Length: 417
Image (cartoon, rainbow, N blue to C red):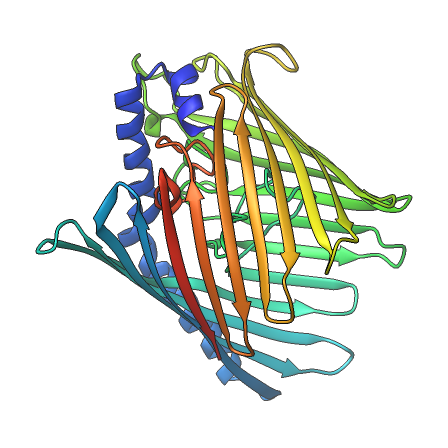
């Protein structure tokens, strides 16, 4: 969310250079490291398939997929519509094993293409095919171990998520798509509802979550989380460590002698149902370098939701988000604040209407989004409209965020099989 803010106050970039860097970061997130990691990804796929094909256990294969087509446009670009098509096929494999042990895997691809009409005669195309999920899991009633390309997400917040460490889920996206990460995830569930997570990541050299600075090449990441019951809700404590590469940062000054530095994250979150739902989510980042003027980053989200007995039921969600850069822990510094309100109302069995409004307290800007949805057994139709500032400060890590800048619309048709 605060990428341009971070660039301005930490690295001293002007607006023009910040915009240029923003485009570079997007390209890096989409294509960076592709040639060096594609071989590793397909080797992992082959190894997982060999493991299953050589097993003597009974197997269950399932296939499914999602095909999505969309048309988008902006009010100030009437002759520049954007057409897109995405296909995500998924193969699931499951073994029947004794002693309540289950072995399963999932393989899926993300194939997409866009056509952007610059003029009636000039068309720009873009597309890619890449692994989307590619993991193997061993699980029992109380334990699971999952390795490979997977989604890891947790936390209590819904719209502003300080704990968006490894994914880039956008609450406006009806499909909730996000790239995965390579790693090993271990989870153990105690009988008293306490659960412990441990993870180790490797080979994720692109930025993820809120990250601006990528992880150093050939360095592991590790962390963990514990969730415990707390009255009518639960509390979670999370930790993560990685090594970041300062040589990938924008800069106006010479680099420090050592460009690989340690980054530690600590987070606390909780959620309760007391008639209304309430939650909080807070994180602290510490980057161990005196070269950075603001090595501390602190984020906090407070949220509440309630379903009013109006008609078919009006679900209302409100959140307030604070992001702070400081030279020391819990000290005053540079900050931004956003508030958000989300409404969802089912119009009937097939139709629903939802909307979101964000407010930027620093720049006094509103972000508005509305979505009508019709759902059949296999089909969904979405008609979305938005009215936002030209400089989009929310969800900066999301490569599709430019679609929602300014004022425009998007029509999306989804088929599930």
